[in-house]
Image 1 (cartoon, rainbow, N blue to C red):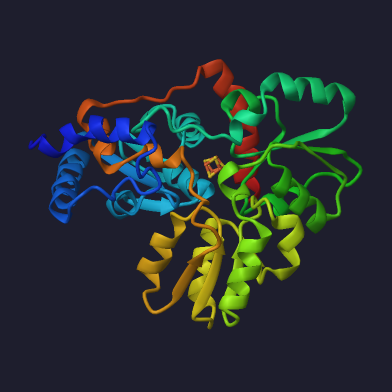
Image 2 (cartoon, rainbow, N blue to C red):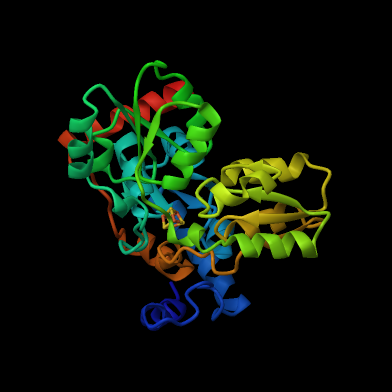
Length: 336
Ligand code: SF4
């Protein structure tokens, strides 16, 4: 195996930490290098009997090299269905952790352990235990963007695709405690009219999308449809302007059905790669070029190849913790 390209990785990782072009980890790479790495990835995938799952926010080359590209729910389902022995998860840590809990007999790898999630880090298991003391009969609903330790304290898990459906299954007289995303929680509260108490976490990438970004793009592209992810910090102010509030998977599916030719897309910019690839005759405008997830971009084509080459880094969840943390996920998967 030609390791020349891979040796560049350490340089690139240093650049990432030093603030080089981390928003586009593939910017430094020639087409020849990309092709070489892709071939290595295909070869290693066969050798390891691996499946590669990529989140919509990963760099374009990783999406192109994956067997399945999707949002958290789609990736969890793909993990559940695969026959492969190894799941290489190009996403962030809580997603790999979810796959490890759903598939305890498989080896789950993540290319870079530094791929965490700022939003998931905004609530701890202790926070939930303390909060529950104030609402002993409350039902705790967590967004999938939470650690296994937090999930273990919760009753239901949701994604941005299925939040409304899951909350509608909860008895109407119950207080609902929602963690950790304030904007998604507020959106679910507005849509379901349920008594939802919302934790004040947020995603920095989505919070970078400001109302003025949206106003300017709508003025510049009056024919464009405006698609918004419910994690957006501007959701509460701009929701009335959105044609659709959707998960990333919902956005991709919606564009295929819509007659519109232009779309303003308010979520992490990685999704535009998939949209442009699927619908080359349509135009997409990122609501903000700053809406880029530093964590997702820790995974690169280079460290993904190294991951399969060296079988690193394995994500495991303590079985006793997994037994509790899997329950809210299973309840969600039974409902949707
Ligand atoms: S985009 Fe936000 S919510 Fe998603 S992984 Fe990155 S920090 Fe977490």
